[in-house]
Amino acid sequence: MSKETFPDILKNLLKDPDQITEVLNNPGKFGMELYDSLTTRQKQYIIFAAAAGLVVYGFSLGGNSSEEEAV
Image (cartoon, rainbow, N blue to C red):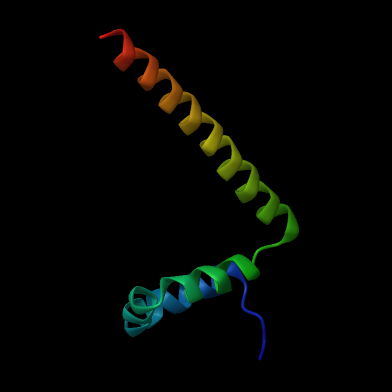
């Protein structure tokens, strides 16, 4: 089984719309195949972005709880 690259996966989705229903039926499998097709540097960018998003989310939750307590 050859490993598809990220652009190949997207091209295949556009060429064969039936694959979109497969993605909707099992999004986890598609997501892992897509993640596995990325280079190490691209994976690092995704992990960094996820971590930054969690930090921002944590700050927004912390800011909202202090405003609610003051009211």
